[in-house]
Image 1 (spheres, helix red, strand yellow):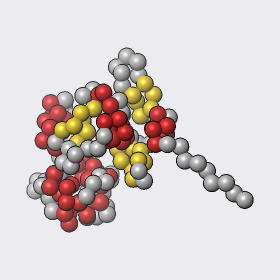
Image 2: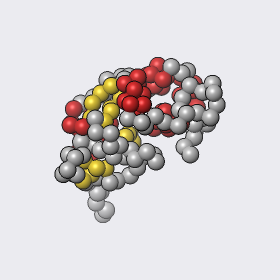
Image 3: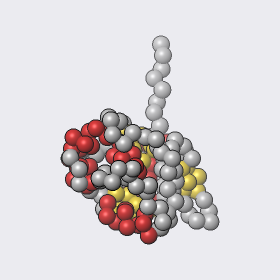
Image 4: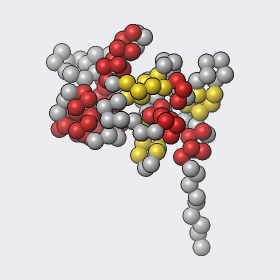
Length: 154
């Protein structure tokens, strides 16, 4: 008779995937990366999400609709909840611009999204209506992005 492997609690799995950096206080994600910008990924409640979003949920609670989890420390691999805060998409864009991390613009002049935003939408587990409202695009466009028909990963 085969024994079923017992799954570790999410908090234990999470703690095994970062290392504390004593000088900065950052918790550096050393497990799976979701993209080439250094953001980690983590499976929480049966869904893959960004590691920093998972950290927020596990340490601070739910993320309200239309809010992003942003980094105070500007270290994309950091998952320390003390280095994270909630903000809207406009806050995220202002912060990226201020720190000189503004994403590569779309190749087409009439595109509403940057490549980074397209990649974020592909991995966003929230309802299509919420994502569409946040980015000011149609729900059908969100679904096309999530299926990989638009803004495919590079």
